[in-house]
Image 1 (cartoon, rainbow, N blue to C red):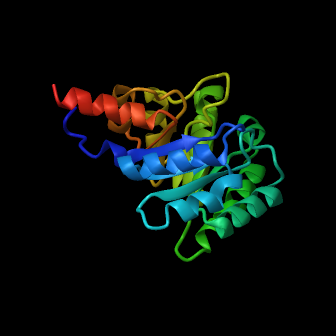
Image 2: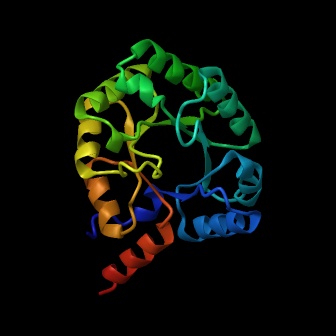
Length: 228
């Protein structure tokens, strides 16, 4: 396990509950700075507060678009992304249109991805775009379709899950499948990752980012194990 010494740098410290308050966001940002997480991932409502709290740190601000169902019209997703970026977001986690993936509707799916990518990649500096495909709810054929088209579009990351779908979250097999079928994209594992061993397993399978609301717990477990 010691080969991954910078585990904190993989973690998007996440708080996407609708009942989160400003106090919760302040705590999240304080933890992110203390543990040197890659980013905080929050609802758009809290972007400006988080950006202010993190201004003198290396922690990025990530926010969500089309969350959690991905059913918004394309122009709404693009507008959400633009507003989030102007509020201070460094990264956008967008939920893909799942119906388009399930039906293999490449026209709609590509239109959705390209519209939000255009917003993100037109910024200076470029804003990272992660596309959530809710992999646990898809067949392998549907995952391959989603990954190959996202890879062709040139999104930055493909992300497994919102963490809210009843079908489940990230799996090792899905990370490996995504890695093979989207070789130009990075992979974000999210959904159900609560232990450091799960996080390390995802990274070893090919994930470059871990989305979790258990970041503090994961790092504390990791430190305890390393000190044995």
